[in-house]
Amino acid sequence: MLVKFKKKSLSGSSKRWIQRHHNDDLVLKAKSLGFRSRAVFKLDEIDKKINFLKKKDNILDLGASPGSWSQFLVKKGFKNILAVDILNMDPISEVIFIAGDFTEEKIQEKIKKKLGKIDTIISDIAVNTTGNKSLDSFKTNSITLDVLSFANQNLSNGSNVLCKFFNGELDKNIIDYAKNNFSKSKIIKPKASRQGSKEMYIYCCK
Image (cartoon, rainbow, N blue to C red; front, side, top):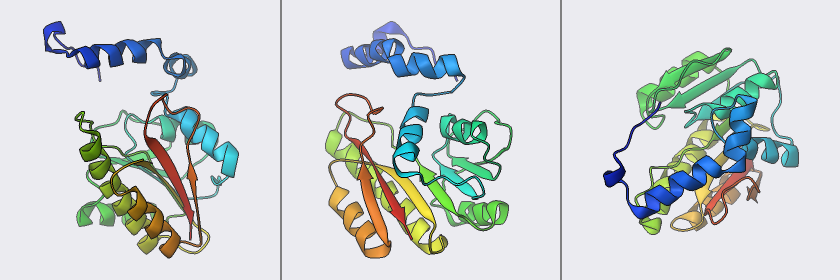
C-alpha cells in the first residue's frame, strides 16, 4: 500500500528514515528479486544458519504482511503455508491468509482449523515504533511472549518456532521462558538487520 505524506507532517527523523529506506541496498535487492520487503533476507540468513525449515512442514507465518517471508517459502517450494496479520496482505499463490489478531481465541481457532497440525511458526511481529525505545521493546516483547506461549501449547515435540524480539524491556523474560519450555533455544542477530537495530530473533525447538 502506498501512503502519501505531506512533507510538513514529517519529522526530521522520519525524513531521514525514508531516505535511508529508499537508499538501502537490501530494499533495492528485494525489489529487484520480486520480494515485498527486505525482511526476506533475514529469514534466508537464519535458515541457512540453523536449517530449520522443512518443505513437508505446515508453517504458520505470524505478522506476515506485506508477505516477503511467505513469498520466500513459496519460492523455496513450500506448500502448506498459513499467513496471519492484523494488516491486510495482497494474495500470494499457495498461501492461505487470515486477517486478524492471532492472540484472539477466535483467530487461534481459525488457525487450527485451516492448518491443522502446526510444525513450524515464524513470527516477524513488531509494533509500530513510537520513538520511546523502552515502550516499543516492552510492547513488541509482550507479543513475542504470546507467540512463544502459543507455540508451547500447540507445537509437538521436534517442532520449531522463530520469532523477533527487541533487546530491551522483557528480553530476559523471553529468554527464560524459552529455556524453561523448549528443549533448545538459540538467539540470532542476522546481518540483514538494519545497522543499529535492537531486533533479535529467538529460535526454539520443542
